[in-house]
Image (cartoon, rainbow, N blue to C red):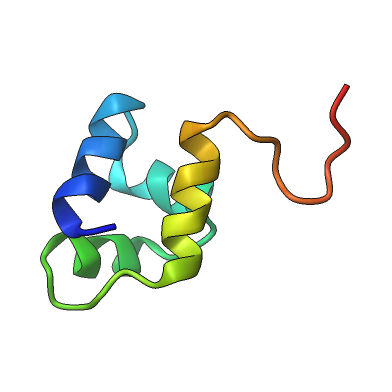
Length: 64
């Protein structure tokens, strides 16, 4: 995942940067840095984003 894809994901779900941070389990500062391309997006965040796109439940929650 790169910065453009992260921005596209946020826009697709109508998330602010703060909401994206909450949904992906990271800080607002991290989202800002990744979108500015000052830091590389970690693989675990890319995986979390993929799970959101596939509408998977959060880890540990039972599927009904």
